[in-house]
Length: 95
Image (cartoon, rainbow, N blue to C red):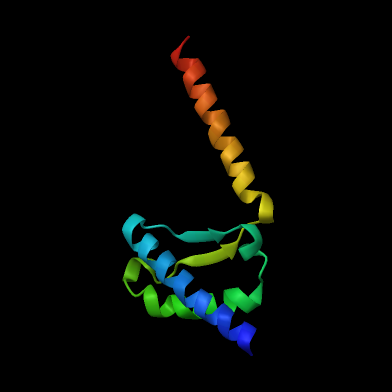
């Protein structure tokens, strides 16, 4: 019960942050990666429930929250893609 309550509190905080971000930048989907994304229903069920309390504006009410398909490697792959894009941009600028 203590662990479940901890996940529910974490889900509330995460839902507040996701809803605020979605409201500012109008995203349709929030992807949760790393070890947190592997928490499964113990996190995602209360997260989605709490999101209905925080995402109240019409354009964020359908916001989807999903675990990253790449799991714990999602951040690493994103950083590598950003570095490769930056390298390609710098190389193209010098041509």
